[in-house]
Length: 146
Image (cartoon, rainbow, N blue to C red; front, side, top):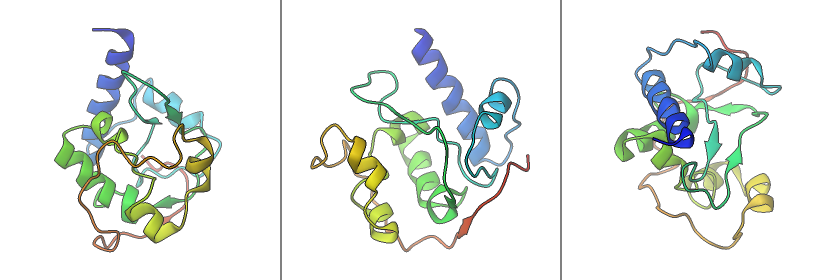
């Protein structure tokens, strides 16, 4: 297994435990959380990258998160549902979750993503079947509590 695949697998396993509510932030994950300068909450899914990490064309690293939208990023959110259905965070990350679709329907055009996308007019590699209004979670802002 390559070093990149090892890192992707470690994150997939960590996010699986987070989805189940049993994550414990041990090294190196605690260091990753502490490195953030943005609004971090343990109630929102950690997103270490977006795109294909193992075979990247472009990988967008989440360096300083903004306010969490638990409707999408919480354990009961749309993104969590997509990860469970797709089988891993790594697969989900390749679906362009912040592109056209439920995220932009609810939050407006993602200017950050559009400015950095290699193909601004291209759709996602795969489009998860979901509705932006189907989750009952809400937004939150804060610091890690785990």
